[in-house]
Every structure is written in C-alpha cells, then in structure tokens.
Image 1: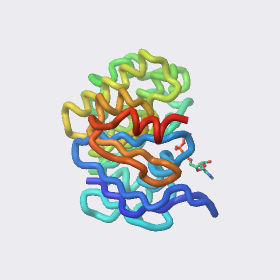
Image 2 (image 1 turned 90 degrees about the vertical axis):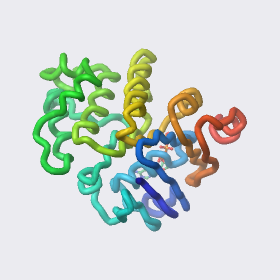
Image 3 (image 1 turned 45 degrees about the vertical axis):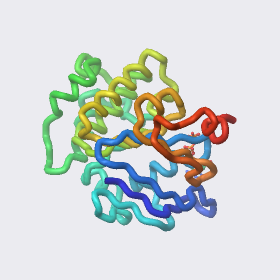
Image 4 (image 1 turned 180 degrees about the vertical axis):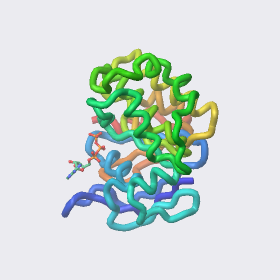
Length: 231
Ligand SMILES: Nc1ncnc2c1ncn2[C@@H]1O[C@H](COP(=O)(O)OP(=O)(O)OP(=O)(O)O)[C@@H](O)[C@H]1O
C-alpha cells in the first residue's frame, strides 16, 4: 500500500536520506530502526510530505502521492504522529480530537465511539486542556487524534520516547489491538528489539541515511542489532 522508491531527502545542502526503498503492506506493522540522527524522522516527514524529497517516488495504494501536500496525504488515509507529539496544549482534549477529524475524507463530523474504547482515559479528560495531561496521556491523545479520521496507514515516530514504563505497555497494547484488527497498517520508529520481534511483522534498519538491513521481524538477530543499532 505504501511504496517508496529511491527516496533522497535532506535539508538545504545536506543530504540525509539516500536511495531508500521501503514498502508497507495492508495491515502490516513495520518497524523502522536505527541509531540517533541516522534520518528516521526525516524519512517519516518525507512520507507525510512535511519535507519534499529531492528525488524518488512515493506511492500509496498504487497512486503517486509525491507531489501531494501533507493535508492531501492525510485525506488519502495517512495518519501521522510526529516525534514529540505536538498536541495543542491550550485546547481541550475534545478540541484536539476534533481537529483530527479535519483530515477525514468525506467530511466525517463525529468522533468514532470506538476511539474511547481504545483510549478510555481520554473520555474522562475530554474537557481538560491538552497541556495539563501527563506525557503518556498526551501521547495517547496524539495517537487518538491521528486515528480519529480513520486512516489506513498510521505513521508513529518514536511513540514510546520519554514516557514511563506503564504507559509504554499501554501504547504497546494499542498497537497490538491495531494489529489484531488488521485494518490499519503501522510504520513506526522504535528502537526496542523486544518490541520489534514481538509485535512487528517486518523491520528496516536505517544507517547513515540508507537501508542497511531489512527482513521479517521474527528473524531480527542480536548480531544485526549489535552491528547497526548499538552505539
Ligand atoms: N530541520 C532540520 N534542518 C537541518 N538539519 C536537520 C533538521 N532536522 C534534522 N536534521 C538533521 O538531519 C539528520 C537526521 O535527523 P533525524 O531527526 O531525521 O534523525 P533520527 O534518526 O530521527 O534521529 P533521532 O532518533 O535522534 O530522532 C541529523 O543530522 C539532523 O541534525
């Protein structure tokens, strides 16, 4: 469903991503791994259209979306949770979630009830300001906002970063439930070998802007992790 061919991207003079080919199939959980600064977020931003790749093509459901701005990619069914969450701290939880509906194709006006089955804590906090939530709750809000529009592909950039272990487990459980339904594919940036081998179907390791390794997640070995991921 998502197909990146020969993507090159960077900032100004500096090239960060070189010749990246990457695929995500419907319902698949794909883990993008790599040390700090190798270009994982830059690749996620390229997929969402937040930065424009210098060359290569990005297709989604066999349609070339390379020239689409981010809002059109969102309307095509791609949800994005950037690193650092980026919720609106001055808006209520409900207002944050309603903003997620803006990206819905066909003008969906109401938040799906299933959203609160997945994120019960948000129902209790609907009228609180986003900024008053804990880090983990803000992360849940950011994921819920991305899911509000009913995407078929969810891009999650380091959702477990900087949150306490109990919430990490909750977020893992949310990704597991997405996997069980197989209705949404997920491409996520995550460093944990344990997570990649237990939940992901497929992995890519990015090293200095290129794909250094890829394969079925169950075959990801300690040796590859040592070679490409440990500092
Ligand atoms: N807005 C920007 N302008 C210029 N250079 C940038 C910008 N954002 C990132 N970079 C540079 O691009 C390179 C890749 O950064 P990126 O954030 O994509 O890596 P990452 O793998 O996601 O790292 P981390 O795990 O630390 O988030 C780094 O050298 C970074 O300094």
